[in-house]
Amino acid sequence: GEQVEQLPSILRVQEGSSASINCSYEDSASNYFPWYKQEPGENPKLIIDIRSNMERKQIQELIVLLDKKAKRFSLHITDTQPGDSAMYFCAASLTGANTGKLTFGHGTILRVHP
Amino acid sequence: GPKVLQIPSHQIIDMGQMVTLNCDPVSNHLYFYWYKQILGQQMEFLVNFYNGKVMEKSKLFKDQFSVERPDGSYFTLKIQPTALEDSAVYFCASSLGGLGGGTQYFGPGTRLLVL
Image 1 (cartoon, each protein chain N blue to C red):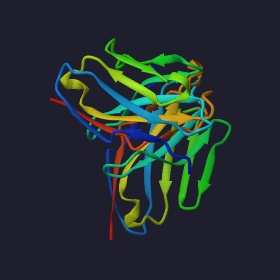
Image 2 (image 1 turned 120 degrees about the vertical axis):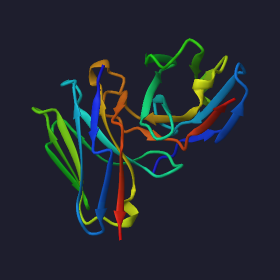
Image 3 (image 1 turned 60 degrees about the horizontal axis):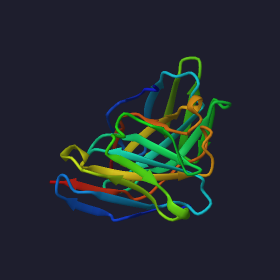
Image 4 (image 1 turned 135 degrees about the horizontal axis):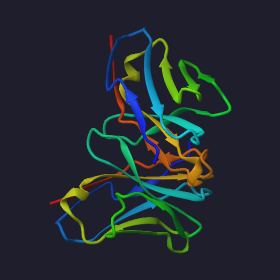
């Protein structure tokens, strides 16, 4: 089945700088890549997603890039704020199974220091 | 945004007992999912459900697990009997479409502790 690798596991940045999280996947049939933000004790919340017909998508300070050839995708948070501190998960959807199952990466703990 | 509700928020039970986790998905959604998250780790897919049937299940979805959504009410995950390793947070999710692109909205989770 699909496997998603996510790095780094922990990321510490200064407020105002950029943060980047990288993911790779194995199944070239995957065509949907969401990113979820999860705060302690809370449910995962979708923050941005990208489909395989796109290479780049931006929503305010969030940018996602998708390289289908390399089977990699990444999240970039520009101008980070302390409120961006949380766990971030990338995921890939296994379209071949036609069920929408999400396979998640192991997560990245982002800490934004004032 | 769309909200998925889960009841109860916490459940503590003795090993061997049965537990039912309830999910109230987004009203017009058609696909329903259960994921399991152990503390500090990622969500792992258990099962998904569409049109009254299980579409796919993972190896984590043991024989002791079952799901149903009788008459469009709660989408439930039943574990009978429970084991110590079932302790985790169980997230329900729902989506409008399932063809590898339906945005999945997650509920707040049920924290299950098996003693």
